[in-house]
Length: 302
Image (cartoon, rainbow, N blue to C red; front, top):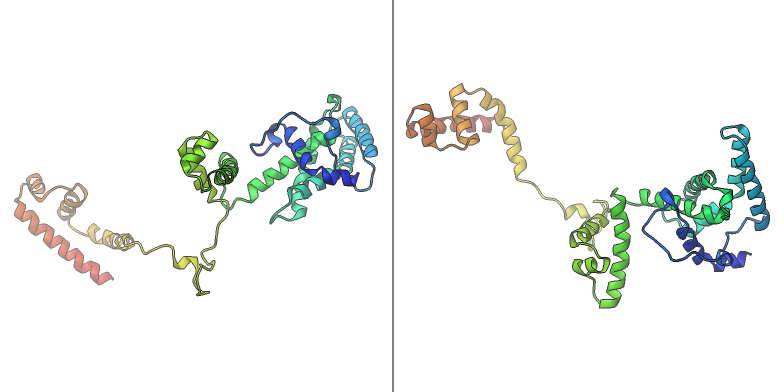
């Protein structure tokens, strides 16, 4: 039984994906017609014969339907079913090959999927419980990977698009002999170029690198932070404006009005003169006087 299970692991994954239902699916995969009963491999049972586990599970599910939900007996029967079928979770966790996540965390997440499958399983449908439960368990684990492996959280649509882009890029590169362009990817996936560009941009959020990470080079102290960013000259302007605010507030009302007309309303000196009933030359002298005083006070505060 163990040897048969090992040789058939590849088809078990497809069985799980073919029977995935509702909110427990994660990912865009679809499959062809379901396999026959003889083709459906079952995971190992940890020493207990599969026939015994199946028979006992059926009896427990029948009992679970008969007892009232929320009672101690209902909780006991359900917990027994969870313990009896934990081998399905362990099988799925091994098949999903956890990456940076600990195996215990993946098993815990898969157990949540097992409980959901037990709650939703209908014995009258004539479907074997492992066939029904595996898609839910693996879907829960996939969702866990989706929510924890991305360095930057992006919408699920873009996460799934990234998988399609990775596969399409590999296929087109092998076929054409060069990395595919955005237009080629769009044609291959039957998408707009804008959608492909959005997916490629979102894919950059899958992994990140620290600014303290060593950059490529001979100098080991050379980091990425040394090569990105620059001093924004506008920052000095922000500081100057912040310093000027109380200085302008202390000016006479007419001087503040002239400054506002010149630099906020963007009026010419002639327009200001016409508005105030004075000559353009007079406006020029007033502005020169105001700006000179502000400049002196600004330099004194630095």
